[in-house]
Length: 119
Image 1: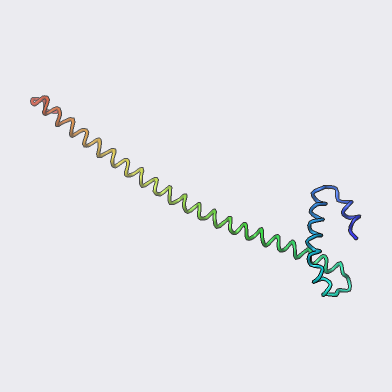
Image 2: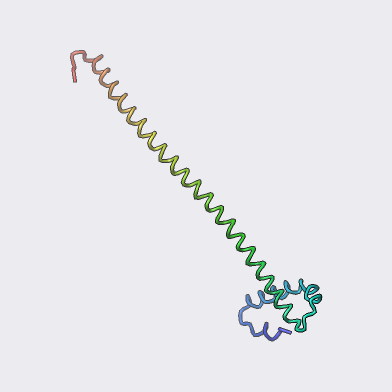
C-alpha cells in the first residue's frame, strides 16, 4: 500500500526507519482487526503512533535514569572536593606544626652545640 511512498523517500535511513515502524505496526494487526474500524489505515497509523510513544517513553526513562546518575556523581564530586579541602587544611596545619618543631629543634641544637649562643 505504501511502497510508492517508501520508494520516494530519498535517504536510506528514512527507508529503514519506515520499514521498522511498519514492522512494529504489524505486531498490532490482531488488535487492529478486532477494532474493525471502517478505515483500516486508521488502526495502522494509530499503532505506529503507539510504537513511537513507547519509544519516546523508553527514551524519557533513560534520560531520567541518566539525570539521576548525574546527580549522584555530582554529589560524590562535591563530597570529594569538600574532603580534599579538609585534607589540604590538615596538611597545612601539619606543615606549620613541623616548621614549629623544626625551629624549636634548631634552637635546642644550637644551645647544645654552642651554649654561649643566644638567638
